[in-house]
Image (tube, rainbow over all chains, first blue to last red; front, side, top):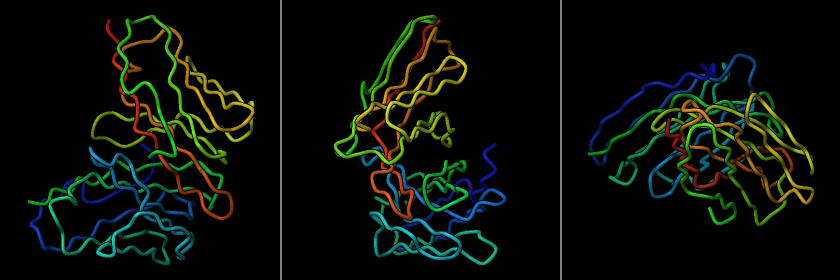
Length: 113
Length: 113
């Protein structure tokens, strides 16, 4: 168990809908990262937050947004869902903002039908 | 990602045999992280390398980062069925205040008893 908790584990929804994925980092970790894993794109970095502030952005679609709350948990919001958004979404956390080991959660499997 | 090439894509070895997985970057690596993933599950941290020439070992797994910090290898000695899975290298390609990782495409390892 990495100590990073992601909910829900599975999510099935329809095109055009909006969903929220939740992540609780390991105790003491200030950075949260979101990654998307799909068969065709592999594991791709989406966004990083450090202590509530956005620190880095990757190939995150405009339909996707994230935030980190004062208690350091994070949420990834996906809207106007398309079939191609079906993927495994991982959250990872680390102590600092750079040069630290990232510990990954078990992921949320999103299926858009 | 073309910035990070991982080879081979897949590997089938007999139990007890040694094997090596390579990860090559087109840019200087600020940090190189090795993870293992069971299909559809979260990533398990194996090792982190940051200094050129660095070598780390844990049980039967050894990882090295070359002097120029553009290539890393993961070596498994006397492979066992428990080593089977997907091995991913993740690279920090920029310094500064972020630790976003670019991941290789992964190496699928099967160990035949």
